[in-house]
Image 1 (spheres, rainbow, N blue to C red):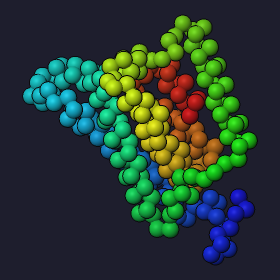
Image 2 (image 1 turned 45 degrees about the vertical axis):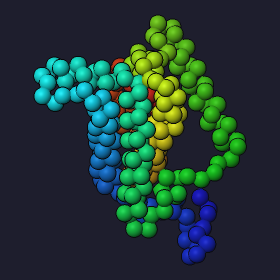
Image 3 (image 1 turned 90 degrees about the vertical axis):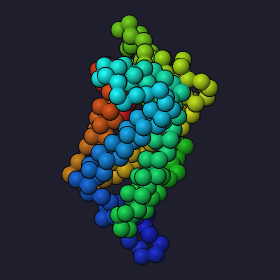
Image 4 (image 1 turned 180 degrees about the vertical axis):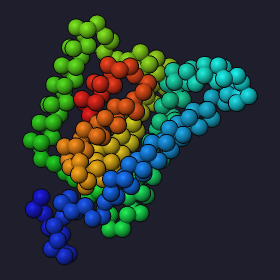
Length: 220
């Protein structure tokens, strides 16, 4: 927080939000990004599964979309392409804001080993406690839809790239990067922004049940 720009001796942009999109603009841009991401996933998936016929009945289309959600290969390819595409879109939106710096806007910088180990430990503890809670409630550790997606992915490394790289890259760039930065510059402040981005992130996981969505919120 005491860093200064070497060129003009002004406080670092981490403390000053003049080059950020404001709360309303951030919200509108965020909505646009989510819509584009979802649209890309649907279009790419339907392109891969070329047996889709738009002239089919509403129930047939519904059944097709439900089966699409359980096609791991289509899901993986669509997620990888849509995630990378929307990450590029986010960078472009940031650059539209005069004076914005990509690295500072998204808070991409090194952290201390102690900080890293502390938060990795907190996340691991949360996962263990969450799984124990699910166990005592008689709930599966992995949602059924994810189990179906995993088992239907061929080759299986596609789903690993999706879950470990592509999906998290998009979500971190949007929620913990773009949205958090814009929300933090408003009356919400950092703590309010943490809650807001976690809530939006959880709500968008509509493929899961209420219990899983609540768990995702607390993890966020």
